[in-house]
Length: 348
Ligand SMILES: *Cc1c(COP(=O)(O)O)cnc(C)c1O
Image (cartoon, rainbow, N blue to C red; front, side, top):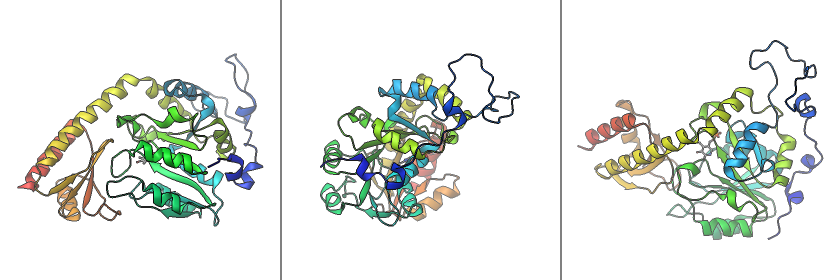
């Protein structure tokens, strides 16, 4: 395959230059200046100024932690915005298509609908791995994006490195690897392979392991060339000042993040041990994430019984290959204990 970024970029996007905001044109070097360029209210309250549209401070820390360059990073209002920007940069409505691998994260399909881009679905195999042969058969000259979620939501497993490498090598469009759960996984991030694959895009988020779903911060990692294209269509102030500040404090606190991840992983093992003893649980699927997918006798019945006991899990029974499955997010020790008590009562 030969990857040609210019060939897969939308014609209208090629001609665009990014919106140049006041804060783009003058970047502070730290010296005291009088800012009369952006029609802001001059009375300081912590957020009266526009935020840095390129989030330089936060990107510098992320680049160092992830051993990449700042030019390889684009930040968004959650990874959901990042994914939407990829559609808008590369997929021509009513003409191009994308490939998703159900059962998987629902947002890819929603975004394909919003952007009027055909979503071609290639089911995972029975052991929840990409069906490489089928995917390659489904690709045509209008296929722009292939979404790979690893560890996958809702199944929890990581995809085979070999299968992903095969897809990266044989697809001349963009392979988007969604690593929302990578910090719970023993697998290495694909960020270390950026130099090897010009068509690789990785998305990460502060919403899961970093415990910051409320601030909305998504991370897109790719070649500087790909990032430059997406930057052309990014809304200038898509990551607000409060988010930039909260995120910066949090990502620097690696000790707390590691402690919390380790506790969640220990709790996950505890929950798995209990699930093994529950009479109506037939399969506990292997997981690399902060949730466990289980097959039960009757998912809707068990979902409602848990709900009556004040516990909300996710019923995934309508998803392909997921009949009668429930997805349990791992909570605090206390929360998991209440789940364990409820499961034992229902198991009697
Ligand atoms: C939760 C989740 C996300 C996170 O999306 P944000 O918009 O960053 O909160 C992304 N991808 C997958 C697969 C997820 O499960």
